[in-house]
Image (tube, rainbow, N blue to C red; front, side, top):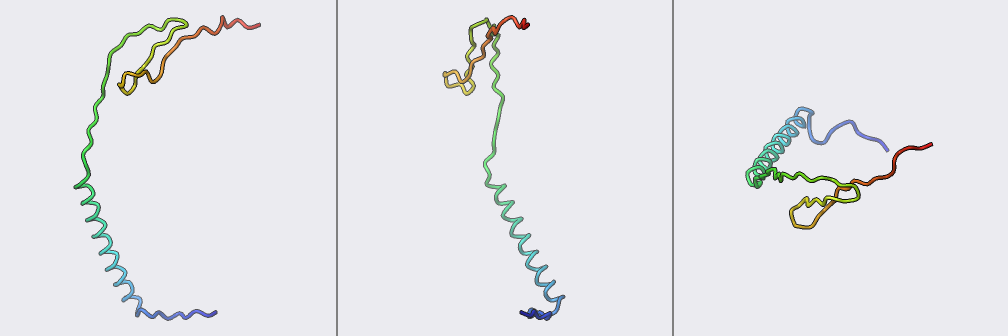
Length: 88
């Protein structure tokens, strides 16, 4: 199999000019699409919701925590006594 070193598109400067034109067209189209996406994107709003609480943890008891506010506890904190820690 042999390859020819000649190009069928014309001279190198003609190829570069066509490539530059296509790249410029692509950049223009991509920029317009990006601006359009930003123009129609919905705005987002966030806020911090803080509920002050002062709960005491008692040994062998738990304090439920409702994270999403639906009235159902999602997790619970508990303090468990696992022993004195005196190991011989």
